[in-house]
Length: 190
Ligand SMILES: [Zn+2]
Image 1 (cartoon, rainbow, N blue to C red):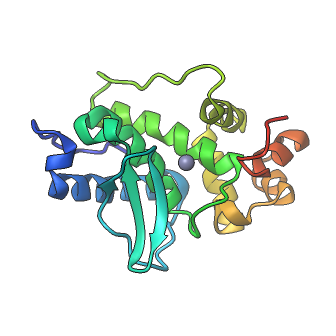
Image 2 (tube, rainbow, N blue to C red):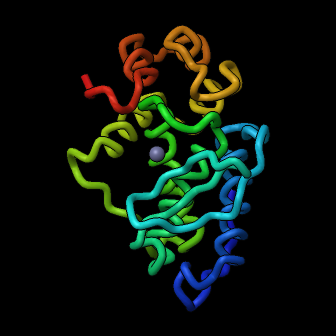
Image 3 (cartoon, helix red, strand yellow):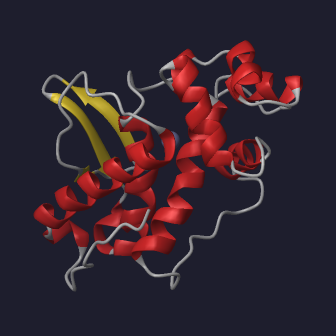
């Protein structure tokens, strides 16, 4: 799917309406790639914070808050918000598996390619745990996004995925890979 978003000339932090529009475009695109999103609570317009990007549940609904780099750069903002939109689509938030973090990181790439027309691609450093999780997801088959969608179709959500569900949803997948994908992201990669 091609996401169309007119990138404003002014920085993201000064463009709340454009940020809200971008989030809505990305959430629709996440559904296209990975299947229906969680709509159990409201999704608030995105914001910014002093630390790294995250998504969390406020009393009023779920919100993605992006890093100071994203406040100033549309390239960072698109990459970070694309990642957080995968989390917003897979609630409850927090305690994500390697599969969910890998999917979120992987999805940032087509989102950036689509919105910046191939002129910007984020660089992921070797040894970055998010890049490692993305590599695990990339091993799910020739079309990792389709494999992720199949897992979500069976499990309802990344959170409820088990190695058994992954093995059933993705024919031919290695069993040890299925276990590694379902482990919590915060556990050391093995
Ligand atoms: Zn994440």
